[in-house]
Image 1 (tube, rainbow, N blue to C red):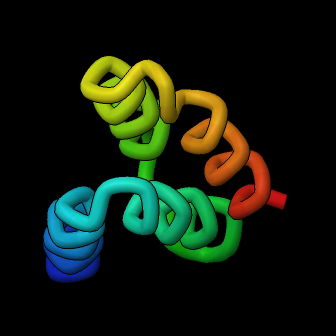
Image 2: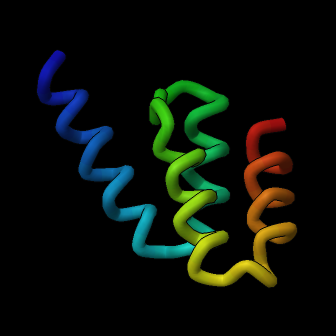
Length: 67
């Protein structure tokens, strides 16, 4: 089971590098079968703090991917 946790952690670190697209992918995967506890929320806050004007787009990304 620990190998699966390591794989999920590596996938999360890789997707974070893609910014908004990574946020979308993490939110989608979190709502399906791969749990990313708090990763999408923290990434949303981080990206929004870097670019406050894009915050509504990031929120819509998270919402659309989770649905």
